[in-house]
Figure 1 (cartoon, helix red, strand yellow):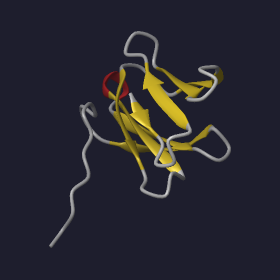
Figure 2 (tube, rainbow, N blue to C red; figure 1 turned 90 degrees about the vertical axis):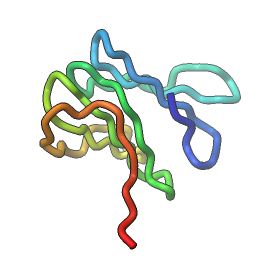
Figure 3 (cartoon, helix red, strand yellow; figure 1 turned 180 degrees about the vertical axis):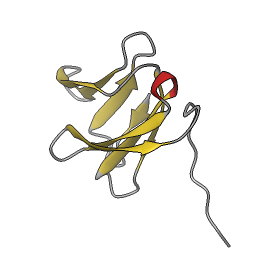
Figure 4 (cartoon, rainbow, N blue to C red; figure 1 turned 90 degrees about the horizontal axis):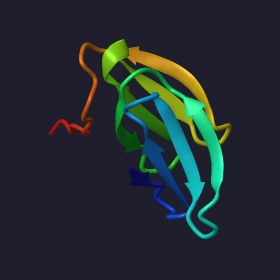
Length: 90
């Protein structure tokens, strides 16, 4: 579960069915359900709130979700994508 940087939406993944649920924080209502892939687990959100990255372990990729259109915009192939973290190079 992750909140968008503006705090208006919350993203929740389902490990069981691979869906990403997007909820409005104020109303607690589901905005959209997006199929991202099998084993959806880790979530990262860009600092500007434009994209979310969803680790899909069983599919060996990270799904990239455009948070403006609320659609999967691409995949990043990686073996065993699960928990996600940002790495900053010095």
